[in-house]
Image 1 (cartoon, rainbow, N blue to C red):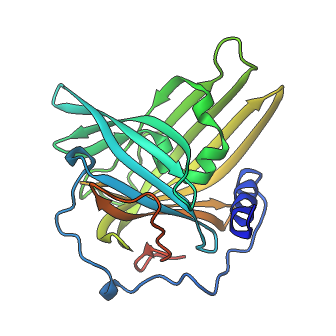
Image 2: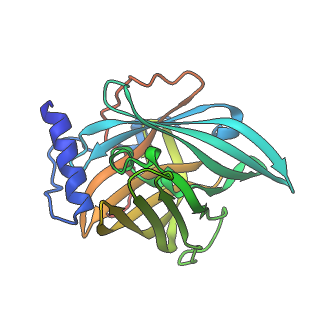
Length: 270
C-alpha cells in the first residue's frame, strides 16, 4: 500500500471510530472565484451527462473519484423515477464499489436522492454495502430553490442486511437533524454554483459477527436545486476528515483523470 492509500485508510478509520486527526494543511488551497469557469445553465443527470466528483481526505489530498450517471427512467404522477449508477474508484480509476441508487426528479430537478449519494466514496466503499440487500430505504428530501434558512428537512435512512444463508450482517445509515443554513456560492473545478447548504447528522450503525458499532458524524452538503449535490464534507467532532466535490460534468468524463484542486464553499466558514 503506498503512502497516499495508507493516509486515506487512516482518515477513514478515524472517522468511523470518532477519533481526532489534524485537519491543518499547507497545500490544497481553494481557488479564487475569478479563476473558476462560470456555470449559468448546468446540465442535469436526466440529460444523460456523467457527473464526476473528486474525493479527498481532511488535508485535501485526493483519495479517489465518484461517478454518477442515470441508467434508467420511469415517469409516474408528474415525477420521474430514475436509477443512478454510482461508481466509487481509487486514484487509478479502478472501481472499488458500484451501486444502483434511486432518485426522484420533477421537471428535471432532483427532489429526492438516496442518502448514499452524499457519503464520501472511500467511506461508503469501506462499509461494503454492495454485499448487502436493501431492507428499507427512505430517500433524502432536497430543498427547493429560494427556501428560507433554518427550514427543517425530513430525515432519511436506509437499512441493508446480508442475504439469507450468509453470516448475519447489517448496516443502517440515517440522516437526522437536517436543516438549511442558508444559500452559499460554491466554487469547484466544474464551475461556480449557487447552492443551499444543508447541515445534518449522519448515524452509522453496523452489526457484524455479533458485534454492534455506532458512529455519529456531521455531514455538510451543498445542493444546487436544479442540479443536486455539488459538495459534501464529513466531520468527526469538529475535524473535517473527508470531502467530495463536483469536478466535471460531461458525457465522456474519464474516470482516471485526477483533479488536485481543493474546492470549497466561497465565503463559508471552515
